[in-house]
Length: 301
Image 1 (cartoon, rainbow, N blue to C red):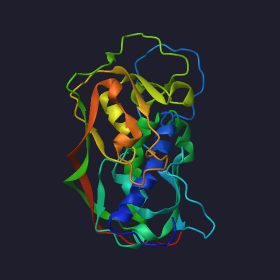
Image 2 (image 1 turned 135 degrees about the horizontal axis):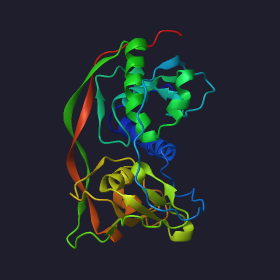
Image 3 (image 1 turned 180 degrees about the vertical axis):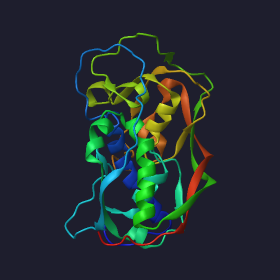
């Protein structure tokens, strides 16, 4: 992102586009696969995910500095801490207070430099704690990383902020008139070859040209599905289905009838969930906004 400001719809389209790129990266680090990365593996048997007690962690080395003219945007995470390169500080603040994927959250009261000036942010877990940190799953690290980022921002940007409830334009995942067309996961079931570890104990067979770009989930929740579909739009689960299920949906091209990329694609342009018996409907959804009370440009390292 260059040194320019963003406002109104154009700004939020830029944010949505960036999130559309970054969210799959974060999910990949979490073990959720992308459709272009299927790797054949032996079939595996379903098993319960186990929680690992987490010790107290701190950031040992922290660096925040304006990006150089030749740096290239990358991030948002470093496995052993946090890294955001050539990104506006808006993104680090967003990450510190809101979990991915994007759920319609906004930051209110930002100074213009938060969105127009790129910075390189690097923070590493204390060297002695890295083995324990790496022993955790992404899902276990995320709630630990956020308070560390909040403390970093309070110290280096003098950030003071508070959360308020809000509403946003978004989508809901609901059960269609014909009811769901998928089955509950059976205890001890065998997953197909090629299934990868997904979020929250799920298994995923990624979409590819070989399977007509269908993506299959096993031992997954409806929240898992809503999160997967929340690529650049907030989608929340309102199916009221609380179990774990096996289901398949299809990834679409995002192209119009003439083969041109749709400039502002909506969920129906990117996903076909008809095989599940579910529907994605536009709706006002509850969300949270972060109100900036005070923030300063970071001091030199």
